Image (cartoon, rainbow, N blue to C red; front, side, top):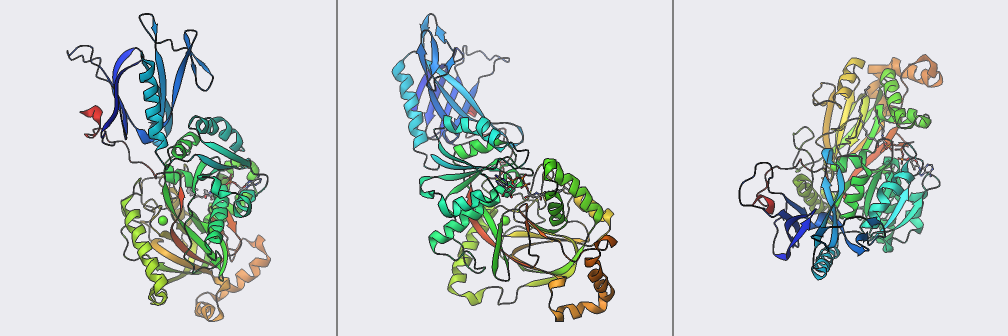
Length: 555
Ligand SMILES: CCCCCCCCCCCCC/C=C/[C@@H](O)[C@H](COP(=O)(O)O)NC(=O)CCCCC
Ligand SMILES: Nc1ncnc2c1ncn2[C@@H]1O[C@H](COP(=O)(O)OP(=O)(O)O)[C@@H](O)[C@H]1O
Ligand SMILES: [Ca+2]
């Protein structure tokens, strides 16, 4: 709770016929019930409410007409607030109210007063405060994927989100996509971005992926940066992105807000929240493939995605079906992973800290990263790559996952890497080596329980800035010779089995699951770009603190 600061207004107003002392400062709106008698009354505690001005959605005048009142949006509301026989002036404040599990709701309180001038003074003062907040968006470009999740994107936007934007005085330009990559290409080539304060994505992780591809590409072109080069320092995008969850997993929304709830997301957009986010660029042989912000998964998660795409008709349940199927199939893949460990940062993938709203680790590591990239630009030879810090692991893996954020979602509330950070310039590289089905199940089940999924001998995790993967079938002849003595028979069999998949032998390669999109190339080079984009979010909030001495209600 913020400190109240200097008061701008203070009046005695009424709320549901009870007298309240109401005050407004630049940071807080407070209403405190006047004690009817100084005697302590155990069943009627003194009621005090306080709302940060930054969390007020809007203020509305209630206009009187023939004894009842009409809202300035035209709808009728019987609120004949009376004291004796006098009708009173009234205004309603809409504000953010926190509910369970990080959900936000739009609550409202109606204040009445006998003096019209006082009432208007209150309305204009609150409106002035809201208008002075420059982080709130006024014009938004909205893309709706009508096809994602349970095909409810359009309905969710129209019924739950658009009315809130209207209340908050936000104007929108809405595009319902007609085909895959419609939003990406529109952002890349057509959208008049100067007209907007942000972009809203209604859909799942795949739709969000389209938006960032369009926006990042466009930003690089506008800034004269080559978006194809794996070595370029990419320019950060200035427009923030809001995510209204309407997909199947909605992991990016869940991991940045704490819940998949369209109203909560809409309210974070309205109050103008800002959350920086790391983005990985994925290249193959110096050729740009894709960006990723959440999961890059080879093996298990790649196979689940490829299998589930053929079952889209099942809706979100396709992931459960394919998850069980791929677990039973138990394919493993051979290859070489090399990575550049993140040095000098605070935090490890196995510590108990969690990335939460205002995360100091992201602030510290983000700062470190920008200092480093300046240095890197001045003196490329100082890069760790040339000073030989790369580490290499060769092996057989059931899964290779890079989690650039926790990847928490309803299926896994703590995520694939619970201690990963949204904006620290790193990704957590998780290697699950070949093991028995029983052991792999233990690992998977720990995604859904409190137990540490990394505390298993066949799982390792590294916090990295960059990594590469080379599947065994793509390795150079000299590399393969090293392995030959160890596994010459299997090589011959896998060759045969590519031609005879029915024999059930493990396939030579999987595909990458890149934020829910399939990557066709298997050999990839991944680099983290610290805080490249910003969301209309604030990270997951800590649970409320019960006693807060800075709260004027507590004084
Ligand atoms: C046999 C027991 C299995 C229990 C495993 C539970 C672990 C679930 C972890 C899920 C991590 C999800 C990471 C997010 C991925 C999404 O980007 C991606 C696309 O989302 P969307 O576009 O909204 O559809 N979703 C997936 O790849 C689904 C993975 C589901 C795996 C079971
Ligand atoms: N109008 C459309 N028709 C078909 N596909 C679309 C359309 N708009 C977007 N897409 C694609 O739909 C895919 C899934 O979208 P997404 O919103 O992530 O839903 P889900 O979470 O169900 O996968 C994405 O690959 C996206 O590019
Ligand atoms: Ca990160």
